[in-house]
Image 1 (cartoon, helix red, strand yellow):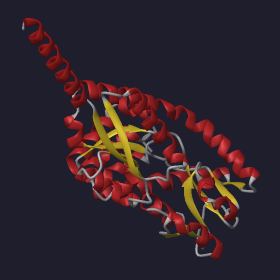
Image 2 (cartoon, one colour; image 1 turned 60 degrees about the horizontal axis):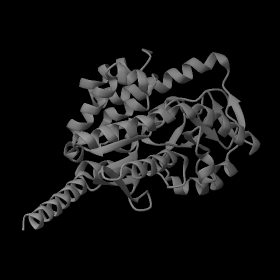
Image 3 (tube, helix red, strand yellow; image 1 turned 180 degrees about the vertical axis):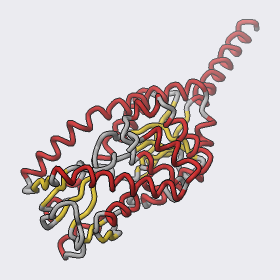
Length: 323
């Protein structure tokens, strides 16, 4: 009888341990704002694979879709409301919720410095307060945007150019004389082909994912801004994580952020590939370079100052080089 009781006790204990191990694993429902096979999802894909391989019993990530299932500008709302737990996205897509998020694109300091000087903590707290979101990590850093055109520019005055734009650099395009037009990425190729636009703003990487190199003749140098892609989490989900889950996630996030060091080399390779595809580099006259970049940052920060006067000055001091 005693032996049977001992066996029963051991069985119950094992069952409880198994239940406990199951309870310790959390599955995060995730979405990417970028196409699965595009450059700006590559790091996310690798991160998900790494978490799922190393996180058995602790954490798993289930990707439920990309822009084909959720429009990029809806991702922020989905994270805020808890429709998804985790997102590979950019502050550009949820600036309607957190206008201060555009500071990440205007950052002139590396993410390591922004973490050290308090900039990360400030912007993360703003995300939590305004959108119920946690800014987990930045997974692109040091990549420029560029103006790409179908006709040769003449200096830094883009009067007469119709450029495909997004809100983050619309004011800058207007400041250099261009007419910004909002065209969905899937329609840009046709817009270039038909002359609806004479060019577009886009990062130094990713053009080939969309086939735009076939209709592009020039890339303007220098670039401007700092292309930002980040991981975000629903704040309620973050609060549910236990100490072991948070420690595991933070270790994986540190790995993902460390991969940013590869971005500059990748951009150099991409520009060489553009040259082989027949895209010429149009370098602005040296005397115009500083003014061109100054207009970019003045226009960008002016937008944040207008939308969030209470936070703009603090963010600018922590993210910019004081221009």
